[in-house]
Image (tube, rainbow, N blue to C red; front, side, top):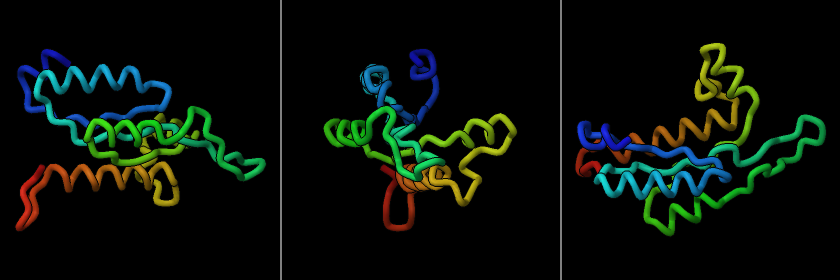
Length: 128
């Protein structure tokens, strides 16, 4: 990260499972020290919908990354639910973001759209 930050214009979107927030904090400190723009934070593995009962279970907590993003003034881009199909699709060469029926895919597409709006200027508005 340090080498790239010195040599390339990097825009970083950070995907953060709630349990890895301490690692993400260190990454944000480092990126800010290097003046690398951070497009936003994504909270990964926010919940799991049980096939048996149909209820959502928050295995690793929920909302911590969103609260933290607000505290440190970085856009919160998405909360991505845990879906086993994300691994199997990725392993099979079909990313979950391409699955139109997938809640995780929808969250990732929404995050990509938000990053696009953050990075690409539109008429009458400069990129941030």
